[in-house]
Amino acid sequence: MKPYSTYYNGHYRPNYFIDFIFKGTPQFWVNNTLIFSVTPARVAKLQAHILKGKTVIIPFCGSGMDAIYFAKSNMNLILSDSSNDAINLTKKNLSVSIGASTINTIISKLTWEKALLKYNDKFDCVYLDPPWGGPEYANHANFTLDMFEDVDGEILLESFFSVTDNVLLKVPFNFKMYDLKTFGLPFSTYRIFYKHKPLLNLVHFGRFEPGKEINFNK
Ligand SMILES: C[S@@+](CC[C@H](N)C(=O)[O-])C[C@H]1O[C@@H](n2cnc3c(N)ncnc32)[C@H](O)[C@@H]1O
Image (cartoon, rainbow, N blue to C red; front, side, top):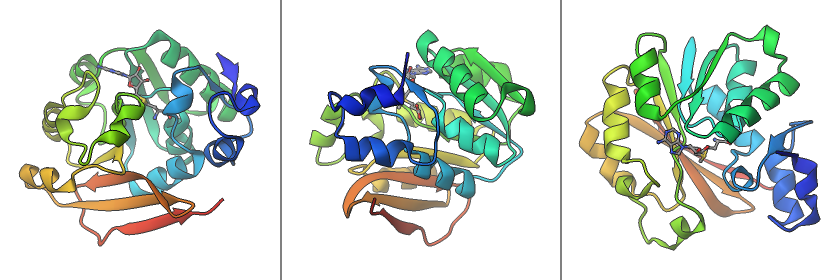
């Protein structure tokens, strides 16, 4: 576990990209793995604007960047992850950014299946950021629901849709949106660009709006 400033030496990501990720977050802790998948703070803020609810479950909480911004939007949090390290990072980042006492939060080390079983009557919306499987995700012409690492995207979505259709999903820029039509639910897509290059997509089920292209320039 290291403060993100440690990564400024450029060994992991170019400095300008680190700036983009953490801008607006004064202190944040990551590890050598999650530095590659932490949600940029400005994207996490946008997510909290898109997904409205009382209690959000985040079953792949990682280092907790998303959680910080949902908490800042006054949502109660149910956070889980299958990795011990991720749980420790999330606890530390939430206590530094929000102050553990001021938010209504449950944090547990669980697989997503166990988290859903345990908390199925406790949440009204879901944020899903399953692992994309390392940098190879970008090599596919079309990233599909069966390409997440260790997680079947179709089963994951069907399982959470059995509780709520208010679901926000983070997928790669090359994700094949057409596959999502098979669920028969309305959804809006937000295409996120950084310096005019596609970075990722957010998909919000349960509501239809025209969707947007959002360009972060610096
Ligand atoms: C893309 S990262 C989430 C990053 C997070 N949004 C952030 O800002 O740090 C995916 C997370 O899923 C977790 N994970 C992988 N397989 C899992 C499973 N079967 N159940 C629960 N968590 C899992 C990993 O430990 C990792 O922390």
